[in-house]
Length: 631
Image (cartoon, rainbow, N blue to C red; front, side, top):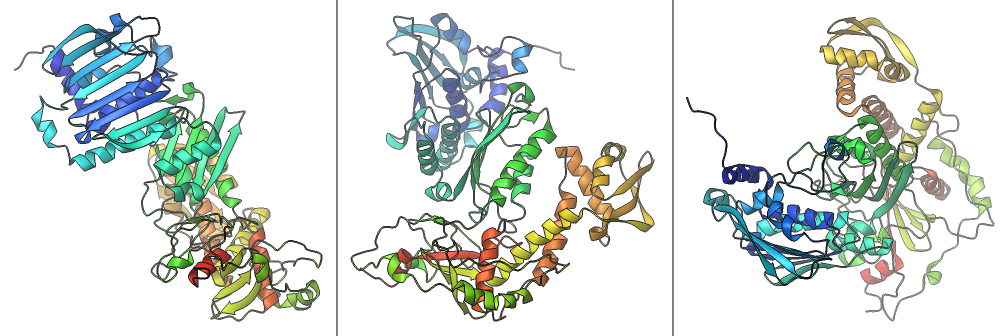
């Protein structure tokens, strides 16, 4: 049997490198975080061959003292924490003291630095085989330069697992993007094989920050994003940033950036809260896009739970989850048609896909018969399309008079009769005769094939899917009626007995008051047995056992659950779908106008209950382009 022995410093560092240094991108992440912790205001990064041949970082930070240079390359040596109290409230990006030692064990590393009070800089070099650091004088301005050459030169097996130069650089660039998004106050320059890829100046104002996001991610995201900035003084939480409109959804979760105290993280609680916030407006299988920043007391979050520090653990999980959910849910709910913020479609590509034009808001298009929005566009710039452009004033038509509307408004009652207990719909009021501004969705002019309502507003043509739009209106009113009436419960003729784990039974006991508010009466009959005696009327035909188990699972993991609300909303959405005006139903002009006014007043009216868009718009510039006017 082998005897226990101490690992050599070289082998211990190489083992640590297996966790810290996965690929060139890992090296860049560690040294960039060190520069940011050192107070750098400008960082330059030079890369060759995807980072395998060379990674060189220069910064203008505080620098490192001469006597500390060899220690900086030692394992578990750091200036960022001194005792347990510091570890419980980490405010820096790095703190473990493993990065430089691990990197130096699998590369040829040179660290040059100078502090403000030193007359000259100093340099330390190490090479993977030999961990002895050599210090020598070197000319250098204030700050530090880290040069990493020939990554994995002494571990050929690890080098074989690296991908192509293009792939490795793509991973490395993503790391730079994330850190550039986390620190708007720092300038970043990235070069690959002597070619400038990114040159970002410090972004202080909101406009500059949005320009950086547009450069790093995509112009389409920031053009279709809503600003969020909410603080909860009692809990010390603040959430700010940008969330994309629901119609700017993605086929994969590749545009989701969430930062906690400046550190990008991937957290189940955060992801669940944001997914819940979008659930009522997002098309099935699509993913939301966001760039969000949460600020809270460092003592309320543990960042020391993963070697790469990508995961965190919140001390108050439910508080954080509910704050994120409520904030983003409210922002999304407030999206509704507004004057000067209309969807736009490019006429140049109307024959196939709808491409970007100057203009803001929701662009929608057909996708496998579901009219799936692939992207959205900007706010209309208002510039003429050419010499033949006709001003928008020329296109204004006669608006329906208030008297004409009042004479025929009763016809709209067929869609949702007043006092209808099933839908709670009320007839929509129409604009008065003294209205001076055209409503956001304008006034109806025609119906197309019994499916679409065509309307005219100051910007141009509005196209509304009448079934999808009415479905959302009915659904939102049904939800309001349900909430106002409260949750009505009914006792079960035969109580449902459930076998659960002891942990789930404990959770059910602890959350008994929550279940009661939701309309359930649940009792514990044994160590691993629950009995459900009463359920909400709306869920009487649901699979109660499965629903309760799902709720308990969410409560155990996230501290809260929206499963019951989701299930109730699904039933209301189905009822709303069947209760909405169907295709091929001929509507009068007043009925169409009443539907447009209802949409303007209804939350989330940009999407139906299934996440599909309800309306879109073509501006006059788009129509001019479609017919090549002025070209």
